[in-house]
Length: 161
Image (tube, rainbow, N blue to C red; front, side, top):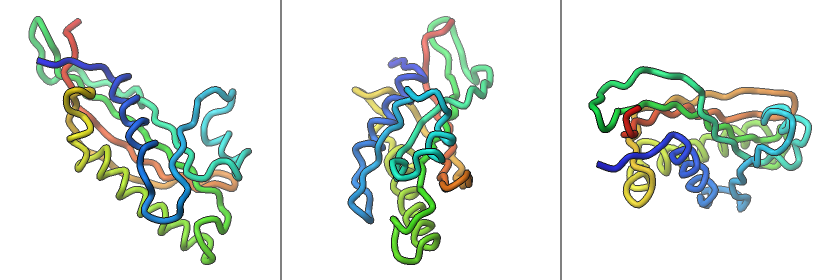
């Protein structure tokens, strides 16, 4: 039985999203490097011009005891928050916020297809072995930036502690 880690799943989500070719506008997704002192939302707000389709994937830290375990492996559940930034400009189109909403919806569908319900092939051997368990999408508004927030839950087998 293959085992994996939450960190490996997170890194795979980042790699898959970075490789996507968005359905509208040529600008690709770019991972936030987590090197800045500010959190992602603050950074995006302060650097709106550079924030277009910049994204971050974080483990939410939510923990549930393993649903299944034996002496070798445990079934673990991990929840990730995928944040994608969109500056409140006309970069998405002439209709400003309306076009930004359209682009965010297109991107959300593409992300869901790649790493969510439709992304099973991206999480099988030789990649981290994980199963999509559910997701929820919301939006968050910070000064000068709209954020698409995809909260995704994955199940995986990990070596028992």
